[in-house]
Each structure stands twice: as C-alpha cells, then as structure tokens.
Length: 449
Image 1 (tube, helix red, strand yellow):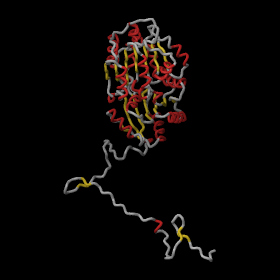
Image 2 (cartoon, one colour; image 1 turned 135 degrees about the vertical axis):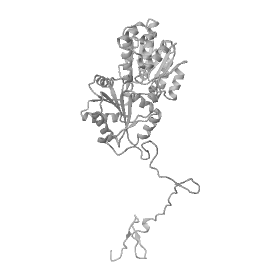
Image 3 (tube, one colour; image 1 turned 45 degrees about the horizontal axis):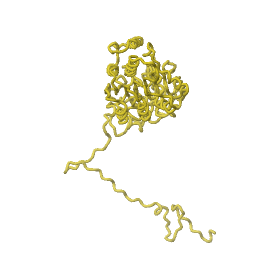
Image 4 (tube, one colour; image 1 turned 120 degrees about the vertical axis):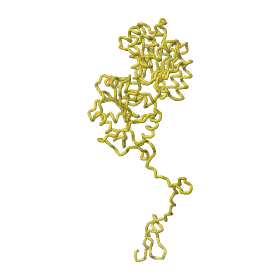
C-alpha cells in the first residue's frame, strides 16, 4: 500500500483517486530513499512505474517546505517531446490536490509564450535542446532548483544531449537532490554523467537486461529483402491477434514508405518521425491511444517513451543498432506486467547485429517461419539449428601424427593469353593483326585496291 510511504496526505489522496493500490518494485525501492533526500541512480525497465517513483518524492519535498514561488523549484529532463508531454500529465495527476504548478518546454511551440510561462511554474518539464535555447536567451534561471530529475538518461546520451544535460545540471547551482533513471546500465558516457551530477548516490539496480520484459515473447523472422519484409508486415497485421501495434524503422524514408503501403492495403495507420510537426505528432499519438488507429509506424526518436494502453505488438522492420535501443523498443509492449509480442524481421545484413543483441541480452530469440510468406534466406549457411557452425568439411587426420592436416591450396595452372592462340593463321609469312588482337587482318593486295 502507498500508505506505507511517508507521503503528504494530499498526495495519498491523489494516489487513491487514481486507483493506485500496490506499489511496483521500483516504487518500493526508490520512494523511501528519495524521501530521505539521497541522490539516486536507478536502473529499471520501461513500464515499471518509475515515473511515480520520482514524481511522488519530488512533490512531497516541494509541499513539505512551502516557499513563496520566486523561481523554478524542480526540473525534469527527458529525451523527447512525447515523453515530456506524458510526464507532464502524470505530474498534474499526482499534484491535483496541491497548489504546485507545472509547465512544459519542448520544441515546436511558441518561444515567447514559453518564456512567459517560465515565470509561473514550480516544476519545469522539458527536453534539453529547447531548455538550452531558453538558457541562452536569458529566460531560464535554475539557481534555486531543489530537485533535478534525469529520466531516460541513457537515451538522452544516445541522442547527443550529453553536453546540454551537463550544462543544465551545472546551472542548478544551489543545494539540490538529483534523481537519475534509465532503462539500461548504459556505457562509459552514462557512468561519467553519474560521477559528475550525482553526490554519493544510492544505486538501485531493479533489473538486468536479461530480465527485461519477461512477459514479452521475442521472435525473429528471416526475410530476403525489404519488399519481403513489407509482405511479412502485412501478413502479421492481418493474422496476429493484437489491440494496437507499433512498427519501428531506422529511417524516416522507410517509415513513410511503409506507411503508404499499409494505407494502400486499407490498414488504419499513422506515421510518426522527427520531420513531422508537433501537431501531427500529437494527433498520431492521440489517435492511437483513442483506438482510432491500430498501427503506428515510427522511428526511434519520435517513438521514445510512448506509453499506450493495449499496445501488445512491436515489429522491428529494421533491427535497432544497439542492444539498449532494442530494450527500449520492446519496452513499448508487455508493460506493467502485461503480455506482449516483439517480432524482428532479419535480412542477411541484419543477422550479425541480431546475434550481438542476443549476446548482450543473454537470450536467444525464438525462430519463426511463416509458410504463406516464406522466403529463401534462413540465416547463415554455416549455422546449424543449434547455433553452432555446420556444413564445414571434416579435415583429414594424419595417421602417423594424429593431427589434422590442413588442406593444401590447389596449384594454379598458368593460362596462356588467348590472343596468342586463337585464329592462328596457317601461313608462316608476316601477319597483320587488328587492334583488339583477336583476329588477323587480310593482306591488302594490288588487285584488292
């Protein structure tokens, strides 16, 4: 029960109003430590309830020490507009019985309107790039920030926001608490950020990558080429049982092409990527959440952090470029203990990447064939069903030494130049040869002239 936490009664009232009953493991681990004022470094899978794990302690701190609002008191940094909008809604739901005001700063909105809003909020939620623009314009003052939250920190680094995040963290110059959340352990870049922005943090490892999305089946289907992948997508959408689906591509061009193919087949779909303006992106997400469309075709940047009820099918049209990115993609389904299905379409140039992701996750994806749309490519020829090398010829054994004998390379027989042998004239007299050296020219005779 949430009543076990030392939260303000107005926050507990909001929790009860929202029908939150049992806290998730990440909430049980993170909320008490955050309420004690510790900096936190939390690794928890997508869909585990980590938003409430930092929003509730943050709101509790702002309520417990009421001050006249003179400046921004808390900042939440996120990698994408969609995730920022989603987080704003969560903050507003949990703070509905308080006087705490929150605001959103992302790209695609009027800059002057945002600048005016900065003077009227307690909690600022935004993306690093846009916040840096306001900082450069002198609109953003963070010296009185009491709580700084870095959500999806690993993804912010992947998107190239490391310097922006570091600069914003340094701008929070007063005493403050920092809460850093990520779905993966990240690499050296994330460790460097942890060392720079956190002070004596409590590390909470709620999962390892091999434990992620236990309720999600992970499959691969081999394909011959992109056209074959498109046919597979059409078959899956027509034959799989699902409420809502998202199809990931690595490029905007492929997303638009696939979207056009699906619409031509009368599939109710929307496309979402970085070139779409803010209104179109919001419309796509709203339509999916409302059930007006069942399928969303998206790139990683646009689809990051989407939380849609009933999203139980993820298709990787293109294999993601890293294990962490794969974790975030399949994290769109199987959320909050639900079940989901993640299918990756694998061409010959995807196999090595897929295998490296299997090793990273310490898992083996289920192999699947669709007879109706079966292709020729079934994986590398030198792999058995067990995954071990096969198809190689047995090496000969020397009966005297018992050692394997390396196969000797066959001696190459020199090939004579064709021009010296073809159309060799019978006459022993001098010959005239054409410029290409392939046929003799007839001698000109006085009679021929």
